Figure: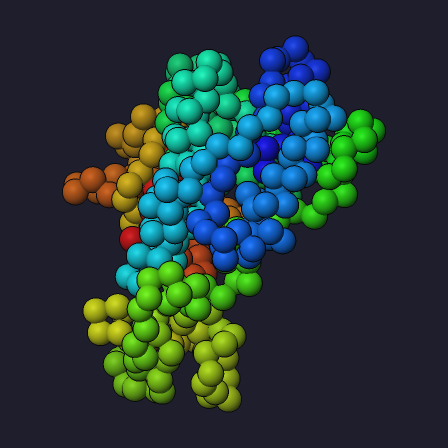
Length: 349
């Protein structure tokens, strides 16, 4: 229970369906300073505990706070900082889902006798005709959260319930208001929970104790265009905040950690039709022995586009798009669908 309306209503829906429900909030904040930051932001801060506990009292279900700060630090925060330092753009919510919610929390839940883990994600779990478990898209496209769940294993999916995936957001808020939950009008969390001010660069320098060196902006031919403030401050496709003017729009098109260079170019330079991915998790299928038509998403808010998925001789997932895609970003996930079924996903190289 994150303290938000979705997980709160998920608990109510399951109780109404006859399940014996236990509410759990994960403690992930790292220290007192961190918890003060988390108090007013994020999905698992101190305010989340207060809100979730009040909801549990209203629903008359047991409620616990479980400590996962060590695994969150190792699997999410350390990963987040290492990826930026390597010139890639991470997705910490995907890491949190895979390693904290659906590994550490699920394991702990099984230890205390639970049969399932349930969340407020807008997604649906299905058992397919081929015998595999898969995530299906939510009934509401604008709130679909399946992209961030591509890493779940067959065992984890078999023990997962996502009741709000059958409803639109307005209906979830309507349920919350009808049963008198204090979080009925609570806004959705938008920022990364451990960086509530969205200043990723400052957070990384604070967390690692490193001063990230400045370097050169260059064009695609290597000509120096100016100076950047450290590669952790940039991501592919970025235009604002570069601190450099050319009289025309320029964008980050590549980050080169080995030379500490940030490459700038035109919007056209961002367009690509192919990508490779590793760390692939197959969900709705067990692989691509032959090229397969799919719909592929390259970031959370990407609408997705037609593509062909195949596997290279050296085992990488190759995705070839019908149309050029803007700002394919190393470190982000590519997630593949067949209609509303999530087939597979991996990390873009």
